[in-house]
Image 1 (cartoon, rainbow over the protein chains, first blue to last red):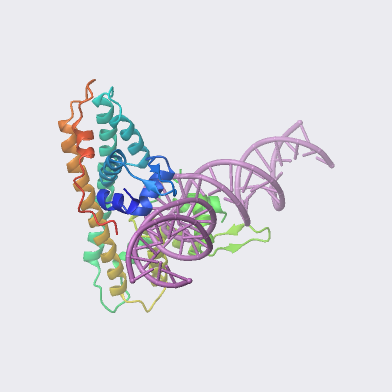
Image 2 (cartoon, helix red, strand yellow):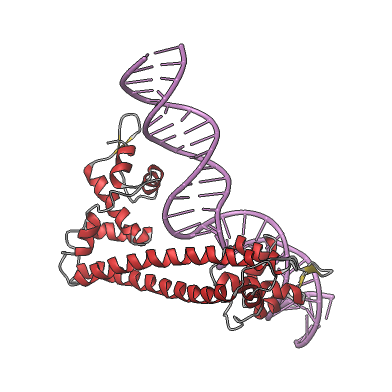
Length: 136
Length: 136
DNA sequence: ATTGACATTCCAGTCACTGGAACCCTCATG
DNA sequence: CATGAGGGTTCCAGTGACTGGAATGTCAAT
């Protein structure tokens, strides 16, 4: 099966599949002409990674998860731990975005949005308010 | 005022301030020795950008917003429009993350997380489920 | 022989920094 | 006066996960 077919089947762009090959997530066979030749097992891996990526797992997580997927002696606890960690990160992101959304919504509501220069949004940005930030 | 002081005052890392100079967000004066010398106006800009960035605005948005901030003839409608667009993007991200969170929570709940290999999380990843994805 | 649709590799760019190397300046101390 | 600490400077490379483009190769059909 050629790469275009693999792309259509997995739902991934051709470029991305080549990239996954380059970083060693997959390792499809090659034809006499150097073209990649995808087997069902390669397709499964691509689908797997596509699913994991769509849930926001990093490539490195995908690598680990793929290894577990192929390991008959795996313990589901390992998978669950990775998933839980990732969920925590997602929820942290959501919390941060919700804070942003709230602040921004409030400012937008206050802003007349007309032809005059007065603007609570800009006013707010001009006032520090984040002095406590640790610059690391 | 030296860069370290500007960093403490603005809550931004020194490196980031140099970067903002490099990309032309700020343009502080220089001493005889080549050191940056920050005025109050530079500090205001840094604080402004720090605030906008903390709400997730891109650097390019910050550039536009800074220009509006300094434009006495601005129209608040311009600011509001940018803010609204950004809010929409934030909310789209939140929606996507919520979907991820829901799916992942569900899978985690189903997973025993013990020493056995059976794992609904991996099972789910192995099953396409995203055939409809447009690879672009 | 040429066209078109495939495929390949390699290089550069994205975004907003961040780390590190190599070096300069200034002041206080021994 | 040499040295060291603690500022500053520039430039280069790396991050994550692709994405775009150029230059080139392959294959079947016209």
